[in-house]
Image (cartoon, rainbow, N blue to C red; front, side):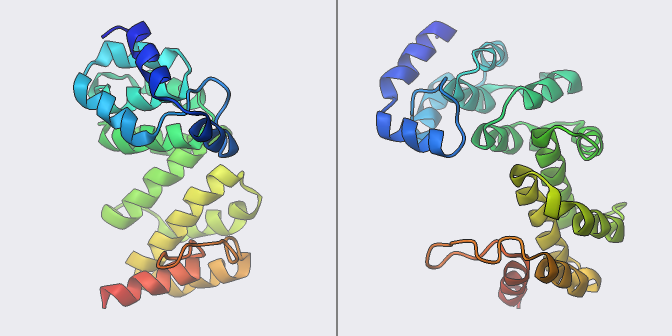
Amino acid sequence: MTTAEILIKLQSLGNEKMRLHSKKNGAHDNQFGVKLGDIRKVADTIKSDHQLAKALWETGNVEARLLSTLIIVPKLLSTEELDSMVRSERFTQVIDWLYAYVIKEYPDREKLRESWLLSDDSMASRLGWSLTSGRIARNPEGLDIPAILDRIEKEMPKAAPEVQWTMNSALAQIGINHLTHRERAIKIGERLGIYRNYPVSKGCTSPFAPIWINEMVKRQG
């Protein structure tokens, strides 16, 4: 399939209700309102196609970019290309799919993590903290946890909302996975109060760090 054919296919799958929902959550007008499951089905018919994925990303269309993250080959991207992709997008749904399907699999992700943690770009910073949260949980060797807590305590209150979310995740992962730092992580969460009153559905865990930490620790037994 060509880029033009895929855009026609995506447009045919769109609906106004989904388009308005996406716009409410931060999507721009270059979108069709396609359900995420339908985008996955289109990806299943294509499998991997790196050049097509890059062309789809260049359209700037929300659904085309989401599809791009599913069919691109991460190891074929340079760090400069991936950094440029991140800085060209403002919709967190696209950024989070880019993280889940491309950046988490990227060989040089540690280099990008260190760079993005120092970035003034909100989406780059969001991803820097996403990668840090992942390392805290799964591969913490070499991380300076007290220094990370210092940054969170100082910077999270004034961080952009899209950055606060992943900084908060890093804070929670410290409390969940690192007993020696758990008390401080909980105290920071309590003092900052970020997401204290966040609405959650029945059966879901609050993103408020003290609740999140205590709930996950309890589940671990």
